[in-house]
Amino acid sequence: MNDHNIHLYRIFNEVARVGNITHAAKNLYISQPAVSSAITNLENSLGVRLFIRKSRGVQLTEKGELFYKRVKSAFDILEQGEFEIKQTERPEIGRLSIGLSTTMCHFVVQPFLKKFIEDHPYIDITLVNQSSYQTFKMLEEIGLDIGVTTEPIKKDTLEYYPFMQYEYIFVATPAYIKNLKLREATDIYECFDRGTLMLLHKMHPIRKRVDQYFYDNGFTIGHTLEVSNMDLLIQFSNMGMGIGYVIRNFVQEELERGQLLELVLEIPQIDRTFGLTCNKTSQRTKEMQVFIDDFKRTFKKIQHPKYNYSLLKKINTM
Image (tube, rainbow, N blue to C red):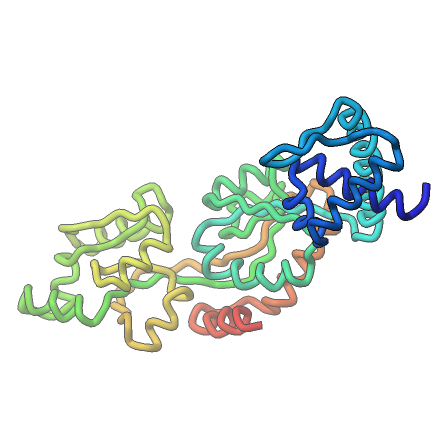
């Protein structure tokens, strides 16, 4: 078999595949007459008719069908060989599964992850969107590699690397505060409990602390809007729908611009952190170690709530 025959076979294979000389010519980036001439030359060389010409294309003859099966099989083998050779030149593809909440994905992991993927394109990443509690459970069952979570209460099986302190504060738009004061004809702190308070669901530990504070200080809350996650709380606060109890770190820019104002209530704050969590007993893969090392380099020390936003902004523009 010479190079010329291989060229003819390639043209024949494409014409047989699409059943049309014009379409085959476009796919092969050669002229229609060149395709027709190649088919004629091949038929003359083999001494058989391979196609029946029809008004809307071509149809393989019985002998053409038999020849096409052999030619197609040969080209399939060649393509598979090319693919296997190319695969040996690629780094081995690793896998990494990460559990995190919508809030952590939006405000922390998303900007970091963009650069991580650019630096490590051969790591397949699966993000599992869920609460920290659900992530802890999956980590304990070795159903995940890493979690970006709040600090776990049980640490006998989990390893935790804190990278960000956070605190909750009450915020509202200037317009909402002004309207509430006008409506109630009194100082904002006198009518605080008569506004619409936007809080996380009642089973959330932070919500329980807020409810206890209100009870201890004689607040009777009139209107509440329960929200399932921090992302929505922040969105609704920015929309002026009420007074939101949100994480300061994630509204720092709005506070600096005056888009949101902080309403200071002396609710006791416990030192709280976000961090990377993994199972102590699970085998540490190289993909896990690369992610942890990159994360630690990005967040070199525990960030204070009032200054963390500048770091996030810096990451996002890397």
